[in-house]
Image (cartoon, rainbow, N blue to C red; front, side):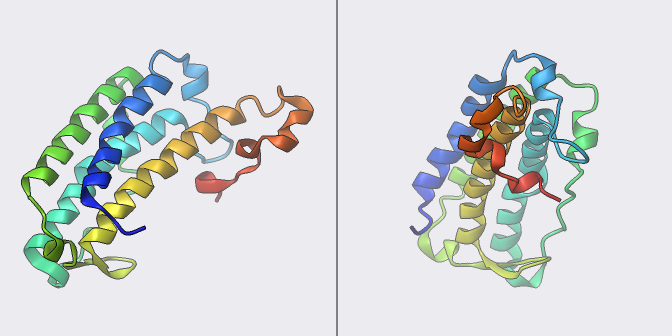
Length: 180
């Protein structure tokens, strides 16, 4: 399937509500526990999504449109969310993410991107040349990756409690995004 801007914005608009419905008012034991080691917990993932709104998606769209391949994106700080989330509750982060995503989508719609602009290229610091359409499609896949990750982190909390059913629960066998 090719990237479709209308479908992209429709999917991106749903992520905050999905997270809110799934996570709001859960006990911290569900949202602050991880899968072990240096893996992220649910709180970290939501903070990471906010940081992405600030430092990645729309800023990189603007770089592609303004500079094309002549200016590389700033490398993404995978720990940039830590300072952003300090002293906040998950409810505050969910509200902040909803606002940030809404603002990002308003900015994206205001650009009124046409097919020729979606073919414009920018320079990713690790991948090299990337199309704007690829960047936007990866935004959706990034959301879906983290929705999956959140499900996996939470399921991990019941890894032992499910007993022999763990062999049939794929979410418990998936190493996915948190794997070192």
